[in-house]
Image 1 (tube, rainbow, N blue to C red):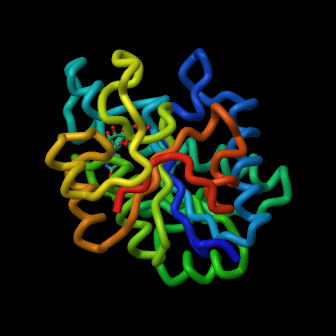
Image 2 (tube, rainbow, N blue to C red):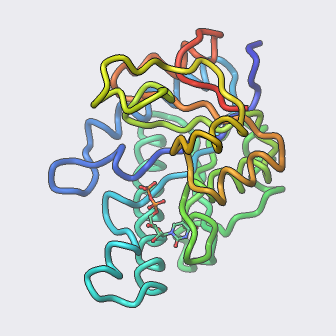
Length: 236
Ligand code: UDP
């Protein structure tokens, strides 16, 4: 058994995006393979999915829409993404369950229930949490930390485009180096943009580690980290 028994994987909506800003079927398949690789290691997987590939409240507000309505649209976008991931999981014989941060009827998905989620995880099901925190003015990063705390996850895996946290922007500064580990205080002091402040504050208060890693560049990365490889950056 590896170090982690139960993980919360945070995927941004953009991680699923195709060129037309919706959902790319090939990327979806890659994500499913990555989930399978964790399951193969007997790791329980909760997922929080973003919605930035479809709508973001802040961008809609900038274009003139009411911010709260925009956030509602953003949260609904995460539900769309969650349904797509669940469908792709089921096609690959992975048992997946979607929960939403606010109630949605019509048999679309269940409301978030931490007890039901933990039960499902312990039965080997993948639980996909959608609608972030269920409230406007938050992000799905905060939703990810909240759900991780609710399901007693050992760690939050935050998939990003960069393979960890660097001393400086690695795209601009070739001398930037990756931190293998990093303390919350140092990350705040150096203003390293890992997660938004609300998400970060929750992690610190609840002593929850975050592993920042690049997911799609090499689809074995998550599996390798679960096996003990020192990839990505662990913020603790
Ligand atoms: N959102 C919200 N409350 C939440 C989580 C998300 O209002 O708890 C809205 C917000 O408008 C956000 C959008 O949903 O911009 C999509 O989420 P996010 O931007 O976090 O998605 P990601 O960047 O991870 O794709």
